[in-house]
Length: 289
Picture 1 (spheres, rainbow, N blue to C red):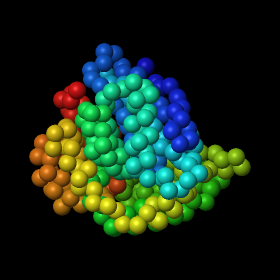
Picture 2: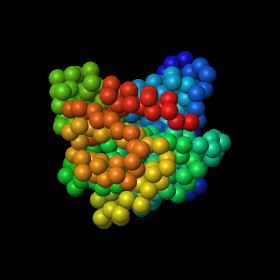
Picture 3: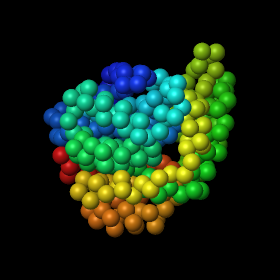
């Protein structure tokens, strides 16, 4: 059934139990499974539209919430909230599912996880879709993420949650300014009821503390080197503040076969269901194993 999935849980080597969804391929399987990886403070619900679309192409799709997000357990050790840990979790998850190779689809932080996996376990990465991130991150975009995630107070209604979602993300989706349906759906991806009956953001606040305490980023360009030989599609929001055009040009220079699509009038980060992104993804999926 298009849109159907089953919920599962996976226990990591160091303790936290992770939630993931398994979308079966629709009809005849056309290639290896797809692993979808969300951004910094998001969860499996970010792929509620995209995952069924990919499954309808004949691909099994696995979507995981990283530790401290959604229904995945928080980590008592704040220092483990970092992409290297998450990449290790996903490698172990694929091994537990006996998936020897997958197409990785990574948004923002999920793209960094994909690059780390390609550098450390290239045998697992059949191909990759990298959404609105690269080996160099704009300081402007990083500062905006810190500011947008600084307010973590719960709210009392879905109307308030939608308003907060709009306030934090309008800059990335200016054409949706008056689209209440869009902001209602956005809120339901990011908020859920807590034990007190209020609506709270679905991530552990220590994730942001860990990001702010992490210091300067290391040189990430070595993690892009595997894509000289691994097929890759880069998607960029046309008005993103995190991935500059100069970085895109350098990514293309270093990986000349890189496919590319840009979503106009969308910032960080596209949902990848936009026509410009989806046409590119559908074509790309048809070309890789």
